Length: 330
Ligand code: CP
Ligand code: NVA
Image (cartoon, rainbow, N blue to C red; front, top):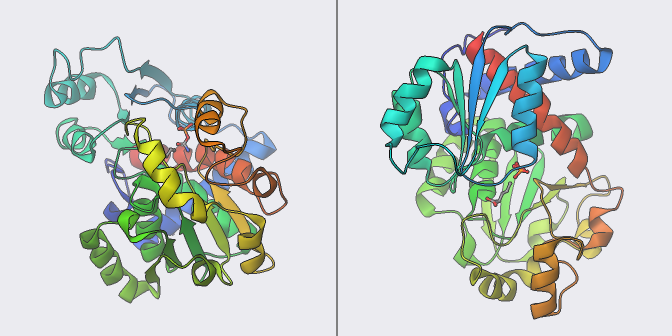
Protein backbone atom coordinates (compact mmCIF):
# COMPACT_ATOMS: atom_id res chain seq x y z
CA UNK A 1 0.00 0.00 0.00
CA UNK A 2 1.34 3.44 -0.94
CA UNK A 3 1.19 6.44 1.35
CA UNK A 4 1.30 10.09 0.45
CA UNK A 5 4.14 11.57 2.51
CA UNK A 6 4.84 14.43 0.09
CA UNK A 7 5.91 17.62 1.83
CA UNK A 8 6.41 15.97 5.23
CA UNK A 9 9.39 16.65 7.51
CA UNK A 10 11.29 13.83 9.23
CA UNK A 11 12.34 15.40 12.52
CA UNK A 12 11.81 12.39 14.82
CA UNK A 13 10.11 9.04 14.23
CA UNK A 14 7.37 10.30 16.56
CA UNK A 15 6.17 12.22 13.46
CA UNK A 16 5.33 8.99 11.59
CA UNK A 17 2.77 6.25 12.19
CA UNK A 18 3.64 2.56 12.38
CA UNK A 19 2.13 2.06 8.91
CA UNK A 20 4.09 4.96 7.45
CA UNK A 21 7.36 3.58 8.85
CA UNK A 22 6.50 0.15 7.41
CA UNK A 23 5.91 1.82 4.05
CA UNK A 24 9.29 3.63 4.19
CA UNK A 25 11.04 0.33 4.99
CA UNK A 26 9.28 -1.42 2.13
CA UNK A 27 10.28 1.38 -0.23
CA UNK A 28 13.87 1.15 1.03
CA UNK A 29 13.92 -2.56 0.25
CA UNK A 30 12.66 -1.82 -3.26
CA UNK A 31 15.35 0.81 -3.83
CA UNK A 32 17.97 -1.63 -2.54
CA UNK A 33 16.83 -4.24 -5.05
CA UNK A 34 16.86 -1.71 -7.90
CA UNK A 35 20.36 -0.56 -6.96
CA UNK A 36 21.62 -4.16 -6.89
CA UNK A 37 20.01 -4.92 -10.26
CA UNK A 38 21.40 -1.75 -11.79
CA UNK A 39 17.93 -0.42 -12.58
CA UNK A 40 18.01 3.38 -12.93
CA UNK A 41 15.70 5.27 -10.57
CA UNK A 42 16.52 8.92 -11.25
CA UNK A 43 12.90 9.94 -10.92
CA UNK A 44 13.68 13.16 -9.01
CA UNK A 45 15.76 14.68 -11.83
CA UNK A 46 15.72 18.47 -11.72
CA UNK A 47 15.40 18.70 -7.94
CA UNK A 48 18.06 20.19 -5.66
CA UNK A 49 18.72 19.56 -1.99
CA UNK A 50 20.85 21.30 0.65
CA UNK A 51 22.80 19.35 3.26
CA UNK A 52 23.66 21.31 6.41
CA UNK A 53 26.30 19.67 8.60
CA UNK A 54 27.28 21.49 11.79
CA UNK A 55 28.85 18.24 13.07
CA UNK A 56 31.14 15.74 11.32
CA UNK A 57 29.77 12.80 9.34
CA UNK A 58 30.84 10.00 7.01
CA UNK A 59 27.76 7.78 6.65
CA UNK A 60 24.98 10.33 6.82
CA UNK A 61 26.56 12.78 4.39
CA UNK A 62 27.58 10.07 1.93
CA UNK A 63 24.20 8.36 2.20
CA UNK A 64 22.34 11.62 1.46
CA UNK A 65 24.69 12.42 -1.43
CA UNK A 66 24.72 9.00 -3.11
CA UNK A 67 20.96 8.59 -2.61
CA UNK A 68 20.36 12.04 -4.11
CA UNK A 69 22.62 11.30 -7.10
CA UNK A 70 20.86 7.98 -7.74
CA UNK A 71 17.52 9.80 -7.67
CA UNK A 72 18.87 12.31 -10.21
CA UNK A 73 19.13 15.25 -7.80
CA UNK A 74 21.83 17.87 -7.25
CA UNK A 75 23.30 18.50 -3.82
CA UNK A 76 24.85 21.49 -2.03
CA UNK A 77 26.90 20.69 1.09
CA UNK A 78 27.04 23.40 3.77
CA UNK A 79 29.69 22.50 6.36
CA UNK A 80 30.34 23.83 9.86
CA UNK A 81 32.05 26.90 8.38
CA UNK A 82 31.46 28.93 5.25
CA UNK A 83 27.76 29.77 5.47
CA UNK A 84 26.07 32.64 7.34
CA UNK A 85 23.77 30.32 9.29
CA UNK A 86 23.68 30.95 13.01
CA UNK A 87 26.45 33.55 12.88
CA UNK A 88 25.10 36.45 10.81
CA UNK A 89 21.76 34.89 9.91
CA UNK A 90 19.11 33.32 12.12
CA UNK A 91 17.84 29.77 11.63
CA UNK A 92 14.44 31.16 10.67
CA UNK A 93 15.90 33.39 7.93
CA UNK A 94 18.22 30.62 6.69
CA UNK A 95 15.23 28.28 6.43
CA UNK A 96 13.31 30.79 4.33
CA UNK A 97 16.29 31.46 2.04
CA UNK A 98 17.11 27.79 1.44
CA UNK A 99 13.42 26.96 1.02
CA UNK A 100 13.29 29.36 -1.96
CA UNK A 101 16.14 27.56 -3.72
CA UNK A 102 15.99 23.91 -2.69
CA UNK A 103 13.38 21.18 -2.77
CA UNK A 104 14.55 19.62 0.51
CA UNK A 105 16.96 20.31 3.37
CA UNK A 106 18.92 17.95 5.60
CA UNK A 107 20.23 19.20 8.96
CA UNK A 108 22.85 17.61 11.23
CA UNK A 109 23.86 19.53 14.29
CA UNK A 110 22.99 20.49 17.79
CA UNK A 111 19.62 21.13 19.48
CA UNK A 112 16.48 19.49 18.14
CA UNK A 113 14.88 22.95 18.36
CA UNK A 114 17.11 24.04 15.43
CA UNK A 115 15.84 21.36 13.06
CA UNK A 116 12.30 22.02 14.31
CA UNK A 117 12.69 25.70 13.43
CA UNK A 118 14.08 24.87 9.98
CA UNK A 119 11.13 22.54 9.49
CA UNK A 120 8.65 25.20 10.56
CA UNK A 121 9.93 27.89 8.19
CA UNK A 122 11.55 26.24 5.14
CA UNK A 123 8.33 25.40 3.31
CA UNK A 124 10.05 22.29 1.90
CA UNK A 125 10.73 18.90 3.58
CA UNK A 126 13.40 19.02 6.30
CA UNK A 127 15.17 15.79 7.34
CA UNK A 128 16.98 15.34 10.64
CA UNK A 129 20.44 13.91 9.96
CA UNK A 130 21.20 13.81 13.73
CA UNK A 131 20.66 16.23 16.56
CA UNK A 132 21.72 16.02 20.18
CA UNK A 133 18.36 14.41 20.98
CA UNK A 134 17.44 12.23 17.96
CA UNK A 135 18.82 10.33 14.95
CA UNK A 136 15.74 9.09 13.06
CA UNK A 137 17.28 8.19 9.69
CA UNK A 138 19.70 5.87 11.50
CA UNK A 139 16.79 3.96 13.02
CA UNK A 140 15.22 3.33 9.62
CA UNK A 141 18.51 1.78 8.44
CA UNK A 142 18.78 -0.25 11.64
CA UNK A 143 15.25 -1.55 11.35
CA UNK A 144 15.72 -2.50 7.70
CA UNK A 145 18.80 -4.43 8.84
CA UNK A 146 16.94 -6.18 11.68
CA UNK A 147 14.17 -7.15 9.27
CA UNK A 148 16.71 -8.58 6.83
CA UNK A 149 18.70 -10.48 9.46
CA UNK A 150 15.95 -11.58 11.85
CA UNK A 151 12.95 -11.78 9.50
CA UNK A 152 10.73 -9.26 11.28
CA UNK A 153 10.62 -6.35 13.69
CA UNK A 154 7.52 -7.19 15.74
CA UNK A 155 8.41 -9.07 18.92
CA UNK A 156 12.20 -8.77 18.59
CA UNK A 157 14.10 -7.86 21.76
CA UNK A 158 16.64 -5.06 21.35
CA UNK A 159 19.04 -4.38 24.23
CA UNK A 160 20.82 -1.04 24.03
CA UNK A 161 23.95 -0.81 26.20
CA UNK A 162 25.82 2.34 27.13
CA UNK A 163 24.66 5.95 27.11
CA UNK A 164 20.93 5.32 26.72
CA UNK A 165 20.17 9.03 27.22
CA UNK A 166 21.75 10.03 23.89
CA UNK A 167 20.21 10.48 20.44
CA UNK A 168 20.56 6.75 19.66
CA UNK A 169 19.04 5.54 22.93
CA UNK A 170 16.11 7.93 22.50
CA UNK A 171 15.52 7.12 18.86
CA UNK A 172 15.81 3.34 19.21
CA UNK A 173 13.29 3.51 22.05
CA UNK A 174 10.85 5.51 19.91
CA UNK A 175 11.35 3.23 16.91
CA UNK A 176 10.88 0.13 19.05
CA UNK A 177 7.67 1.52 20.54
CA UNK A 178 6.31 2.32 17.08
CA UNK A 179 7.26 -1.03 15.52
CA UNK A 180 6.45 -3.45 18.35
CA UNK A 181 9.94 -4.36 19.56
CA UNK A 182 10.87 -5.06 23.18
CA UNK A 183 13.32 -2.28 24.00
CA UNK A 184 15.69 -2.65 26.93
CA UNK A 185 17.94 0.24 27.98
CA UNK A 186 20.76 -1.58 29.78
CA UNK A 187 22.64 1.22 31.51
CA UNK A 188 23.21 2.91 34.85
CA UNK A 189 20.22 4.99 35.87
CA UNK A 190 22.24 8.22 35.36
CA UNK A 191 22.08 7.65 31.60
CA UNK A 192 18.57 6.31 31.11
CA UNK A 193 16.36 8.15 28.61
CA UNK A 194 14.39 11.08 30.09
CA UNK A 195 11.27 10.04 32.02
CA UNK A 196 8.89 12.09 29.84
CA UNK A 197 10.08 10.37 26.65
CA UNK A 198 9.89 6.95 28.34
CA UNK A 199 6.25 7.68 29.27
CA UNK A 200 5.45 8.80 25.72
CA UNK A 201 6.99 5.61 24.32
CA UNK A 202 5.18 3.41 26.84
CA UNK A 203 1.91 4.94 25.68
CA UNK A 204 2.72 4.18 22.05
CA UNK A 205 3.91 0.69 23.04
CA UNK A 206 0.50 -0.17 24.52
CA UNK A 207 -0.96 -0.08 21.00
CA UNK A 208 1.84 -1.94 19.18
CA UNK A 209 2.72 -4.76 21.59
CA UNK A 210 6.13 -3.22 22.32
CA UNK A 211 7.57 -3.07 25.82
CA UNK A 212 10.04 -0.60 27.32
CA UNK A 213 12.37 -1.77 30.09
CA UNK A 214 15.08 0.22 31.86
CA UNK A 215 17.61 -1.80 33.82
CA UNK A 216 21.15 -1.49 35.12
CA UNK A 217 21.50 -5.30 35.24
CA UNK A 218 23.68 -6.45 32.32
CA UNK A 219 22.90 -10.16 32.75
CA UNK A 220 19.13 -9.71 32.87
CA UNK A 221 19.19 -6.98 30.23
CA UNK A 222 21.03 -8.99 27.60
CA UNK A 223 19.45 -12.39 28.39
CA UNK A 224 17.93 -13.93 25.24
CA UNK A 225 18.03 -10.64 23.33
CA UNK A 226 17.78 -10.74 19.53
CA UNK A 227 19.79 -7.57 19.06
CA UNK A 228 22.64 -6.19 21.16
CA UNK A 229 23.18 -2.54 20.25
CA UNK A 230 25.68 0.00 21.51
CA UNK A 231 26.97 3.47 20.65
CA UNK A 232 29.85 5.73 21.68
CA UNK A 233 30.02 6.70 25.34
CA UNK A 234 30.63 10.38 24.57
CA UNK A 235 28.66 11.90 21.71
CA UNK A 236 29.62 14.70 19.33
CA UNK A 237 29.21 18.07 21.02
CA UNK A 238 29.92 16.75 24.53
CA UNK A 239 33.07 18.07 26.28
CA UNK A 240 36.26 15.95 26.27
CA UNK A 241 36.19 15.92 30.08
CA UNK A 242 33.15 13.65 29.86
CA UNK A 243 35.33 10.67 28.89
CA UNK A 244 36.63 10.09 32.39
CA UNK A 245 33.16 10.11 33.90
CA UNK A 246 31.61 7.91 31.20
CA UNK A 247 34.45 5.36 31.26
CA UNK A 248 33.94 4.95 35.00
CA UNK A 249 30.19 4.70 34.53
CA UNK A 250 30.01 2.50 31.45
CA UNK A 251 32.97 0.12 31.32
CA UNK A 252 30.79 -2.62 32.83
CA UNK A 253 28.41 -2.09 29.90
CA UNK A 254 31.01 -2.68 27.14
CA UNK A 255 29.68 -5.27 24.70
CA UNK A 256 31.80 -8.41 25.07
CA UNK A 257 31.55 -12.02 23.88
CA UNK A 258 30.05 -13.01 27.26
CA UNK A 259 27.16 -10.68 26.57
CA UNK A 260 26.66 -12.00 23.05
CA UNK A 261 26.63 -15.54 24.43
CA UNK A 262 24.01 -14.52 27.00
CA UNK A 263 21.77 -13.31 24.14
CA UNK A 264 19.95 -15.66 21.74
CA UNK A 265 22.15 -18.01 19.67
CA UNK A 266 21.25 -16.18 16.48
CA UNK A 267 21.56 -12.69 18.02
CA UNK A 268 23.15 -9.84 16.07
CA UNK A 269 25.47 -7.07 17.19
CA UNK A 270 24.65 -3.55 15.99
CA UNK A 271 26.31 -0.12 16.23
CA UNK A 272 25.43 3.05 14.33
CA UNK A 273 29.21 3.74 13.92
CA UNK A 274 31.76 5.22 14.17
CA UNK A 275 32.90 2.84 16.95
CA UNK A 276 35.85 2.71 19.33
CA UNK A 277 36.60 -1.01 19.08
CA UNK A 278 40.42 -0.78 18.92
CA UNK A 279 43.20 1.81 18.96
CA UNK A 280 43.22 2.55 15.23
CA UNK A 281 41.77 6.06 15.60
CA UNK A 282 43.23 9.28 16.97
CA UNK A 283 40.66 9.66 19.73
CA UNK A 284 40.73 5.93 20.49
CA UNK A 285 44.51 6.09 20.98
CA UNK A 286 44.40 9.30 23.05
CA UNK A 287 41.73 7.99 25.39
CA UNK A 288 43.28 4.52 25.39
CA UNK A 289 46.65 5.94 26.50
CA UNK A 290 45.17 7.99 29.32
CA UNK A 291 42.85 5.32 30.70
CA UNK A 292 44.75 2.16 29.75
CA UNK A 293 42.00 0.79 27.46
CA UNK A 294 42.31 -1.00 24.14
CA UNK A 295 38.65 -0.47 23.20
CA UNK A 296 35.62 1.26 24.64
CA UNK A 297 31.95 0.47 24.03
CA UNK A 298 32.60 -2.83 22.21
CA UNK A 299 35.47 -5.31 22.13
CA UNK A 300 37.38 -5.86 18.91
CA UNK A 301 36.37 -9.54 19.14
CA UNK A 302 32.63 -8.78 19.00
CA UNK A 303 32.99 -6.02 16.41
CA UNK A 304 34.83 -8.35 14.02
CA UNK A 305 32.73 -11.44 14.82
CA UNK A 306 29.98 -13.10 12.79
CA UNK A 307 27.46 -11.52 15.17
CA UNK A 308 28.32 -8.09 13.77
CA UNK A 309 26.09 -6.54 11.09
CA UNK A 310 27.44 -3.00 11.41
CA UNK A 311 28.41 -2.59 7.75
CA UNK A 312 24.99 -3.81 6.60
CA UNK A 313 23.58 -1.01 8.75
CA UNK A 314 25.92 1.49 7.05
CA UNK A 315 24.86 0.41 3.58
CA UNK A 316 21.22 0.58 4.57
CA UNK A 317 21.62 4.26 5.49
CA UNK A 318 21.70 4.98 1.75
CA UNK A 319 18.66 2.88 0.82
CA UNK A 320 16.52 4.21 3.67
CA UNK A 321 17.50 7.87 3.21
CA UNK A 322 16.68 7.45 -0.46
CA UNK A 323 13.23 6.20 0.48
CA UNK A 324 12.66 9.14 2.83
CA UNK A 325 13.66 11.72 0.21
CA UNK A 326 11.66 10.02 -2.53
CA UNK A 327 8.51 9.68 -0.39
CA UNK A 328 8.60 13.27 0.82
CA UNK A 329 9.65 14.92 -2.47
CA UNK A 330 7.98 13.01 -5.29
N1 CP B 1 25.94 6.67 12.05
C1 CP B 1 26.21 7.91 11.58
O1 CP B 1 25.37 8.80 11.62
O2 CP B 1 27.46 8.04 11.08
P1 CP B 1 28.14 9.40 10.61
O3 CP B 1 28.41 10.20 11.85
O4 CP B 1 29.38 8.98 9.90
O5 CP B 1 27.18 10.13 9.71
N1 NVA C 1 25.57 9.31 19.69
C1 NVA C 1 26.47 9.55 18.58
C2 NVA C 1 25.88 9.04 17.31
C3 NVA C 1 26.80 9.15 16.11
C4 NVA C 1 26.18 8.62 14.86
C5 NVA C 1 26.78 11.04 18.48
O1 NVA C 1 25.85 11.84 18.55
O2 NVA C 1 27.95 11.38 18.35
